[in-house]
Image (cartoon, rainbow, N blue to C red; front, top):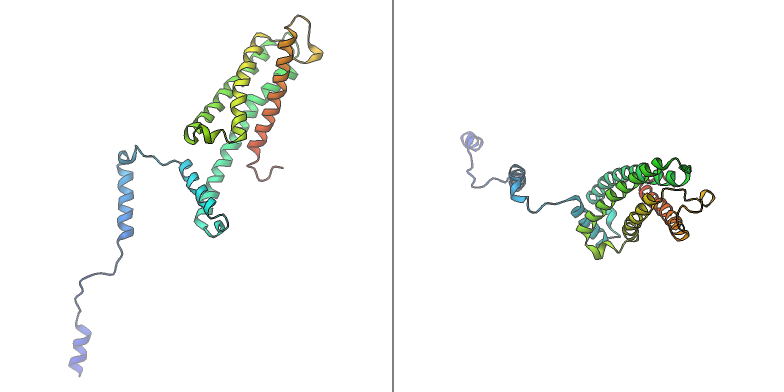
Length: 222
């Protein structure tokens, strides 16, 4: 009996397979190989916008159960933080280089000797307007024109871009006061003056709406 017990303690049983799952290791190896040789996936990039579209489709299909997907909610929250930061930076740039100069050249530079201030403000507005429309063209590229123009804000941004270009040309040619109390006969025709006053009103209202669009991402605002 002692001999048999000793043999049982020292004996080994040969096995043909190990119960180890190597799938995670293989997957990690494949991912690392893509990072080492990115040229293989260079022609098929995956952007944050693509991830947003995927998450949007998941949310549209499971609107009632989205709270159960912790990983998806964490991804959305993380991306929202980046989106909010980007929009607030855009809001600051828009207010500093477009909206404030726009108001200044209308209400502040009312003296006929301050045409330089009017010129500088409108150049700042023009450059900012072009830069922001460049961002809109990127959105057009990825969404397509049909999908892009479904949004009210996108329609307004496109309209204002062309509207300000017309205003910029008229303003450079007519660097006089646009407030009725400062208007002098002979500055320009009544039609041009009235048209520019209407453009002033539309641009001011649109600028205010755009600022509200930027600030809506801030949870503490309003």
